[in-house]
Image (cartoon, rainbow, N blue to C red; front, side):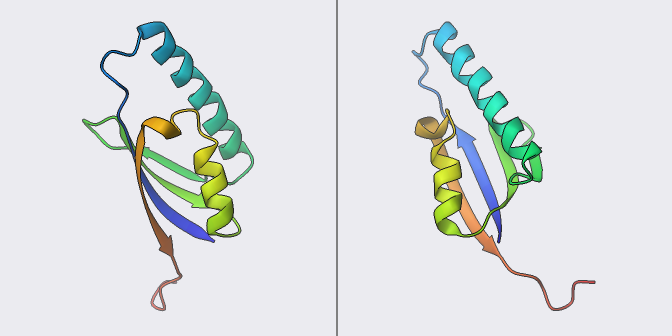
Length: 91
């Protein structure tokens, strides 16, 4: 099942740089592993924002929730999810 997911990251402004850098590195490694597994086939940056638009390919909403909540940056994200269905005019 495909999901359109918009994630906006809001790290606390007083978070120490070392902690922020560590969490960002762990996030990158985890996201890249999910991409290699085929669960995160599309990832685009939103220009000018600390945000992304992604397409996530998982079995269901429960798996999506588990995937998103496993992200190291999850506690600092505003996430908006839209389930996708094939359009009847798509070729």
